[in-house]
Length: 538
Image 1 (cartoon, rainbow, N blue to C red):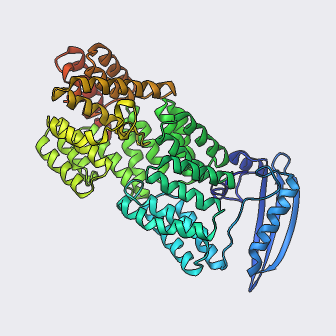
Image 2 (cartoon, one colour):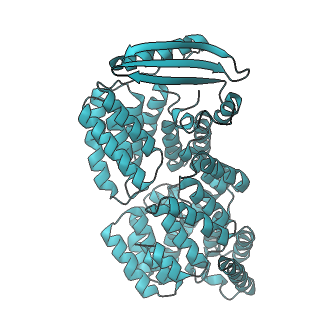
Image 3 (cartoon, rainbow, N blue to C red):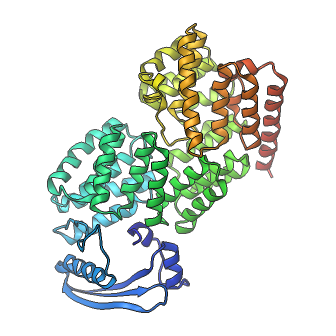
């Protein structure tokens, strides 16, 4: 059974046959229907079609008063289940469904979910309005609270928006508690609870709530997506990928699932498959920025920087307020050695522009201002990186040592995966090891470097293979004293598309600065970037 979010993306009737649509959705049957309303009465006509031969398996008409619409839904579910002789969750029972007391509230809720799935700030803000209005119309309708919680979390600065996460969590907690009071056995509510616990970094609680949601409703694909992310944060990459693939099998056209699938395939070096996933998003919804943004990232990190600019511009054209697209395009312009263009897109991240220009004092000041405005993990790591580039290793220690609890066991914040592969906290573990070395703590640095090596070996054992990983491995390998291996890793990274400006004057690579092979690599990066820059003016 395909999830609703994929089914809603099919434009029918069109030139596609029932068989074509079934293949897209990965299903054996298609439910086709129509609704006619006249005053307070409604007629629902339904056909269940066998996709293999195109014949109608079952059909019926339902004439009811509009207030009985939910009763019709129950009847249709029961009759389809009987017709297909399905065993749902090991029994004849369907997942628990929460009913609104008002048709208007239910419609508002459905519209909220429609905009929620689009994942742009503008659409999420519309979703918030719809969910709030649904609650106002029916304060006892638990799914509307669940939808509002999901939306508030995605509008935080830890997801798609710019609102402080702590503010969004504070607003979400009473809503999820109310939803649990109203309907403690509703899968959607447990999914939202798991999503919230994930943002609180309570991953065991997140896993438990999301598993409960899936137990209650095995086809709730967003619960699977959030369980996938939770497993990533728990450093369980195989469980994560398996869970994401299960979500994909249920919801093969869903934007967010294909976006995550593209990212997972990309970090495993399976770029063609990743591009196919990104293209599925574009085909299903050409107005969504997600497919274009993913295509931009894939072409950028493959070395096709000029093509990547075009992809990102298409993404921003469709969602000008999309913070992620703007940041990635700005970072791409830095790799193209066009800092003026980068500055226009990197609002709030000007420390990167200063670093690319070699202005370390100004970069530190900008990163400090960003950190003081919002001292979250991302900004701590960014400030530490900037201080390291400026040679202020005492300050790097002051920022990162508080995060190092458990680091020498391969645990703690410095080894948490974020799913954002251009910024992961484990990259900061190398900055901490560098700071320990530069301040004389060689034993502490050595212990940490052992765990960093083990961490990357762990990722490789799961099939992770990407120029970014080779570059990060080169950074810590230099610190272990193996310059030749580090140069080999950098060579492999450049051959596979690595073009980052950050390779220049990277303090962890200092022992390579005078080696001819390293200077040759920098010259090669500059030459390849110049060619890509020239393509932008054609």
